[in-house]
Length: 397
Image 1 (cartoon, helix red, strand yellow):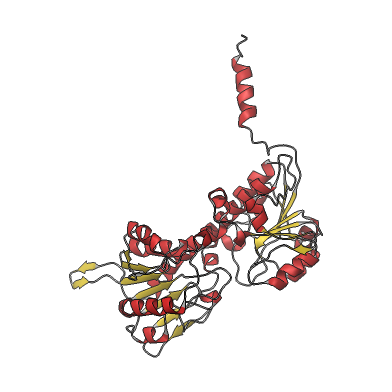
Image 2 (cartoon, one colour; image 1 turned 90 degrees about the horizontal axis):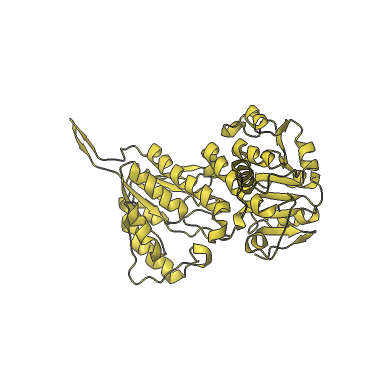
């Protein structure tokens, strides 16, 4: 039996550890920058760009695309991207276009037929947008449709961005509240801790609980899914339970829509807790449906002056009856109700990093060993995400 020399072993090990993707491949990937007003995130950050260029792909980024999120043009250039002020040329020449949010009709029309568009496409609520994608001949991959399975966790943009929204919601509430959150023992006396009530214990809710707890407040939480009780308590929160409640968990771990009877019992249970809370953070959402109304006007009327509601569901109608998306409402009894929109964009640097990593994980699946697009509809991830292809709308709702 022949024994390999040290040099031969080292060469073999190097070949084994070198990613297959590091071949001489050339997929032209464009990051034209966001067109949605107020959007501060960028779809790919320099660390991801460097990884893709190392794999042989050609990256093209519009000048200034990362400025609002703390990623200046030189960082993209150093990572190997071509940075150009001509967004139109990038759009029309790229084989894969990466956005955070759908770029709108003009950019879609300018793209080359057959190109792949990766973005949050609002597939459940924007059928006209999907039809426009199909008419332009683009293959649309909707990031919000990543299935909640173990193999897709690295691509789960809803979770990565919801975590940031939950974190930020606690800070928004703390900033608006005219009180300390933690208990403070001073020479002038002891200040009691504030009480934060979090409604909905999904990814955003759990992060809101964790953040509010770190800030020193007493945290209560409610969710229609009793299975999350252990998670809430592990973060130091107090779980509010509805006696004899049926489990309202639907496929994918989301909460299902409740019956009128269930909603009435829920409101009765929550009324007293809302009334005594200093901050109420609402996070309940049902994909593709209006946000459930958890906090009524009557509940708000019982809250103390100076109390705060931060409604993370404002963009889909709000969990509070009095919420107005993008506005802060001050009620007659002195309660401030904030309906922030696009909250992840308020933390644009880390939100961009996480989104970019989600996209990179998708590209690992989408691109084959030679660097070509391999759109396998039999794959449960790609099959679920692909909303348009070959001029047709594939998404059925």
